[in-house]
Length: 365
Image (cartoon, rainbow, N blue to C red; front, side):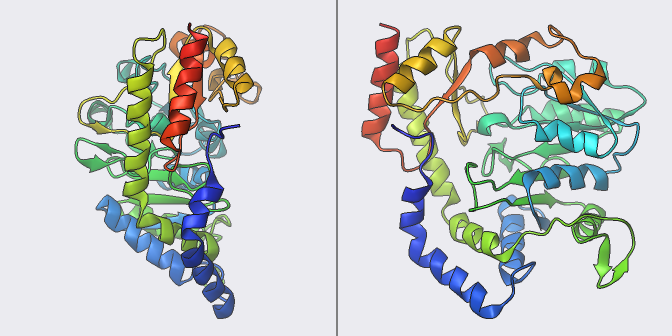
């Protein structure tokens, strides 16, 4: 079976460097918020051309603490997309706020900016776009709406490390960008991990306090916070990979280009890259009305195929209290019925890419 991703192959090329760093951590006895975390925060901030980066325990925590530090609280509303992983809405609910969904652009699968402004009310505090599958959302339009209406923009960059929009890194455009380093991500560690990047000094100070039980001085707690500290081992892994992230993303783009060439002309909607955007292809996600049949065919041929995401957020049982019904967001619901992702990782051999494409072409006859 050709897997969706192959973490073992990548580790084999990094093993000596990672193992040495991990041994040094065990020898030092410093496991939490130590020199590896500080190094990673400095380097990620430089990579994004922003002054601050804060390491956290997960991408979900990054979203939650960014929203909280931005002032989102009880009774507020945050506009976001219904086509994403559950954590995006979950973080809003953690703050006591309501997720307000805007339908998606059927081409990029990102939030449809034309749907945002009619949803703004007196309770709206922020807009939370997701750069889904590695393609940036339409940030110029989102930032213009936010500036005009006095709203904060927090970017969900869980799938888009290294992506860019008109020359700026995804995550560096809004007041904060939130990253997940879960092992399946395009920039990943070997456990849970997350990060916030920001150019706002007050946001940086408060997030650092919130991640450590509301404390900026040992045993002095200015507010009730959380336990969300990135550990040294995960930071060490990320420091090794950070030097290679642009090459990894270039390789993903090369795989995507090969898929695009080999699958052209089939009755499939393939991923796009809008002008001014740099897609990093965390996933290579196609659309077809025959999605379930195609996925079954690929599995039978020895090719992994996964559906991200089969149920839109507004249809999730956990969010039923917000009163959304089927049909509320037709483009998101249609995407949930049609999307299927095929293997995508930097080391994916061209022979496997061609085998996958041949299997897809055989399905369509």
